[in-house]
Image (tube, rainbow, N blue to C red):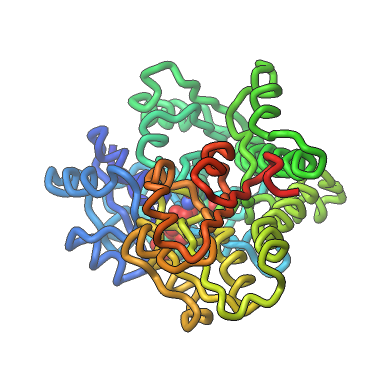
Length: 445
Ligand code: NAD
């Protein structure tokens, strides 16, 4: 199939590349001329395990190409995916203007029947808006009888495992009111469902809501565990035991039951806020989802509170090492990362920071630009802890799991660790002579 993908971010580039890998011919189109120029010369705008190799291979085999020109992308396309950003607006609702711009460009450009598939995460009702905008553009061009379909096909991939998730999704959700289109979409996704993962055909609005409901449910599990972790710290329980205790119930399951420093990223925070906003606009109080967000905001300060309790509120002259900046491991994405809140708070209290992340330093430099004078970015994890008064583990990159604690202790000013991802065992840390604080395991009372 000939496919066009609009937007070459985490979702668009992965979608286009994976469809190309299955033998389709794909044009990836983006308005960002620099991004496209770099992609054409083999430089990827993002880090995702395995993506670069796949891009290079499919470009070399002429199934994948990049352009800034939608005409080029749509020339032979049967299906056009919209995979542009939907960032949070000021009031928390999703800004769908990029999606509508893309739709408008499609209407102004298409010359034959086209299936327009919305892969961006959009509030319920957006497919209707996309349909109307395309119709308007076709009418302006006196092409009102050109047929097209609009499909909702939300994406569930996780950053850090985007290629693997796209190649082996748990399910594919397709919202359409057209039987023929449903069949064609099924065909397109069949290579990705070889283990009988369901391809769920449903109405468009349910598909749009499904994406928000999925992210809000996952965010709920995180905030729930963070709340229980606080209780554990207060009364003397261990969140790891509680996790095993509740996760063994098959109705609950083990996944996504980790306490930590709060969720971040480009999806959970904005999608949770958007769901609250959609509920509000429709007179439905989203009390559970609102609480999920409030708990998460509070949780981002939990490590900071521990530092305050240990070192006091005036941190002038204190130097803290931060391991992990990205909002989660295996990505360079800094959007809404808890590290931002933690680092800014410590610097506001007078501290300086020595930070290390395997992939996210360049993005961190941009996001934390205003705080640059108080941050040193280290070339490796050991450099970061040199002369530090404490180490804060903020992102659970694998390489942080079993570090050489003896060497670490010898390099730090004081052997103090605040573990925002519960990576280490308290008994072992005590044996090694560390003062160790973590989340919900009664090390912080
Ligand atoms: P991104 O910001 O990484 O990339 C978006 C790209 O779209 C940018 O390169 C931008 O230049 C381009 N763009 C914007 N307007 C355009 C236009 N009119 N024409 C062509 N290109 C245009 O975004 P992302 O993280 O890939 O997310 C895209 C969508 O997918 C969002 O709605 C997001 O919520 C959703 N989503 C993201 C993830 C994720 O993990 N990142 C997972 C599932 C769903």
